[in-house]
Length: 107
Image (cartoon, rainbow, N blue to C red; front, side):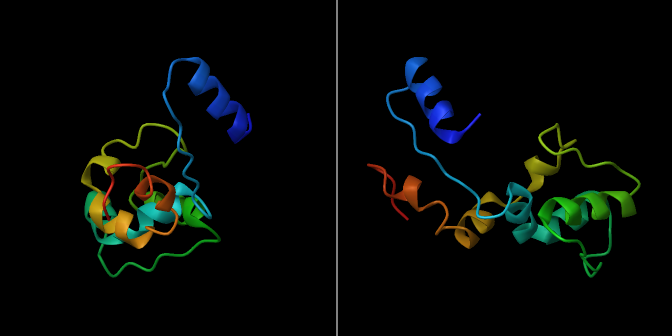
């Protein structure tokens, strides 16, 4: 489904407005801005080298090193709960600018 269809569906379902926020790469790339908490969650050394072709691949590899499986779009088994959202949002504030421009949001 393309983003305009999602927006249209949300509006028809009763949303007053819809602000689309798109990650330039993937949401996993955003998560990696808080790699310290990800390493802690996975019980990996904080100096563990992060390798991969994109954020999703990098997270999959880190999870594998911790004998776990990362599923895109699925329950993260608690990882999301430990992420420093303020740190991440500051790192991607340019991508979040549509939200910051909304009435009542100060950044």
